[in-house]
Length: 371
Image 1 (cartoon, rainbow, N blue to C red):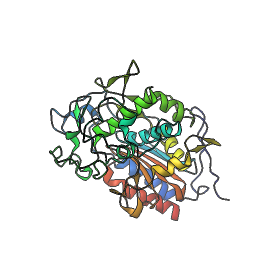
Image 2: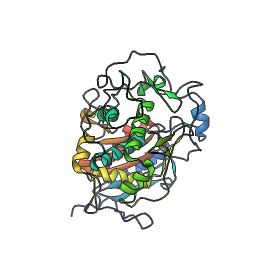
Image 3: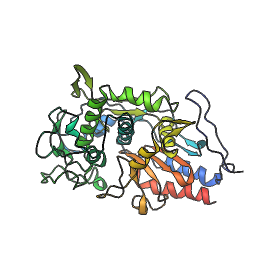
Image 4: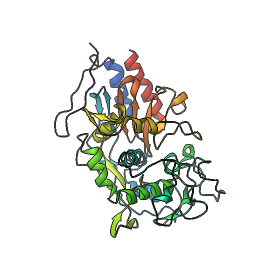
């Protein structure tokens, strides 16, 4: 009998488990995958402040830490099939910063804003509804919500003490090794793809203006509580990111931990978010996000087919040769990865794994399924 598809009960109750054979998997390969993940921890120091201050992302003074930061824990993770837990390793309730996996959470919040009518059209210039001066210049006036969500905005400016120049010419394949921050001439919005944390933070601030409420509150109310997540997670901003929104001083939050702050969360809660994506926005008979928004989020960016709206895609096996083509990912520095494979009913969360080992992990899971 095929394994049914379930959603787990709320945090605090036992997450249903399924033996490997019941889940249609081979326990030997599944166990090997967990062992492999444990043995391939990323060679970052546990003291993340030391790592950020080392110049890994950029040299001083551009690497100044603006938000909270704390030491990380060891590698851990889990695998779900059809919502059942089939493998775990390490401490999956270990709360750590997840770096740029948080960008995908901003995508979920954009979906809430679209659902609520706060964003009428993704192709509308942001400056029509967000009037804080940052979209008034000739370079920025045509930046749309879609541009910000696809990393094609070419937005120019300084935000919370960080210039967009810091991440210009950024090459993720050379992260921590290659040069960036060159004065590359800007293109028109929508004509150049670039992974730029300042511009993602500008999206977060724009969403804050539209909601008129702190984004962590909205995320808790509209996403995390409905899917039964714990209260162990938090989303930290910068000491410089308090802004006036409707007469209130509210803190904007970043889409990563590049300069400290960002999302602190454990693997169990990340697995729930992955399962929400696997289920196309539905949870236990309740519609959390419209299926149309999930579909929109996963459409390929014309300038980078491996990217959607702040979600990574594996079409053509461009990211990982051993993961199915329909795989999607929330990816963050430090080997923080949520893998969703809809065709297989798989959600896996990897914390603090060497990114170069990820494809081998996928191969082991695929071997477990193919037996």
